[in-house]
Length: 328
Image (cartoon, rainbow, N blue to C red; front, side, top):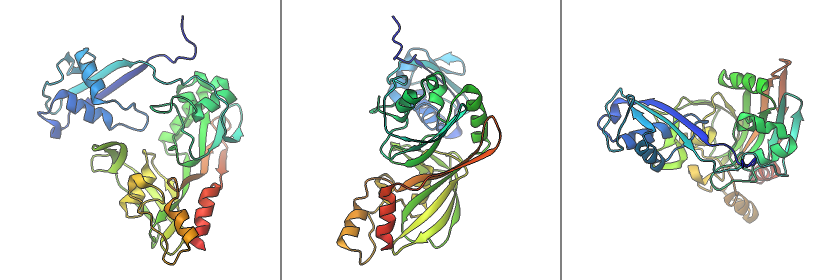
């Protein structure tokens, strides 16, 4: 009997050309490096999975099945097509707490609280925004990724758009790829920025830590526009507008220019406190429990009507208290 709550196996299809610098390396190593550094929506695969799939004949080198230790040459094509058994319940509906800013037959706009994971994954098989959306509108279960158009990190709060049907999904995907959907964030950064700037630094996965991204010459193009909203003694309130949408883009870019976000220990936050700060303010800033980042503005064309919609969200209470502590 088919379990209606159990999603079908995921089909993993990846394709890459061996670059010059990988010439002479093992197939399993090269495939892991190439397939691990994909765009935001591509699946993350492990070396153990790659090795298992190579041995099963599911990875080919120039159309031929080979062994994991086979050496590769620049210009060869590595192709993978495999099934990954389902590990998470994407179809399980749950009653969860989040705010719906707008909805109609075509889209939903939600204001995600900090601490809520967006979709099921390792360590979070249930209790995600997807599970809550399916409770609110079960028909989303018929769409890829339940209609999600973007991801926010667990500890980033703010606005997200969700497609409610296949037509809207296609239109929003096209608009996202053409950079016609505007996404602006508020963030509190360590250090005092003299002025706003355009950050144009390619971003890719950190080969030493799969949970991090980093600025790297061979990464994917990434551009963030940063404007100064307010300066404090040792911090800056900024507005960051995304031109591209790479994983952790704002966090990586701000750290790369020497201004990591408050609370963002993964990207080098130093727990800076203002000189002369009170004991209460010092404790609040040093112990801020998440990256101080909030998706505050979303602009898009309605997928059916075509009119421009703009949604705004005030930063949540913890960020407002942080700004107040820095200002006072």
